[in-house]
Length: 178
Image (cartoon, rainbow, N blue to C red):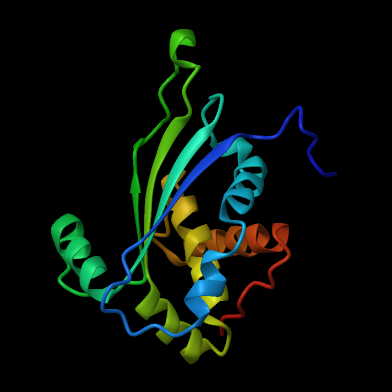
């Protein structure tokens, strides 16, 4: 059943890019034209049980390259190598109760950072479009912002299943992994 305007979750998505000097092809323009805010709203509605109560939610999505994501990975995860996606959750652990006077502002969930270069390489290796890979990684990052993790194979399987579900909500065919 599609949500009505009365029960839709309000989402503010800040889509940022730092693409200077990147060797990425023309698919980036098409990627940026996607309805990211609407997609995040649908995803968060589907994940409502994982959300603390709030009048709305804010997420930042930064699309960048290997050099910047490697620096962030080194600085915050002590791994001096590029990665595909990083998620910096604003809230850790159990979500705090929000006082009624604070309920007027959207709740900031955190930042998702994606390397377009990594996404392009992974898409080529996996045989699907780079745009689909970025969407897949965005769903992965959003789940991390909500406390999902994959410390073992069972948790990874559950998370990948949830990512696949999120992509079907926006009429995208999830990538197949073997």
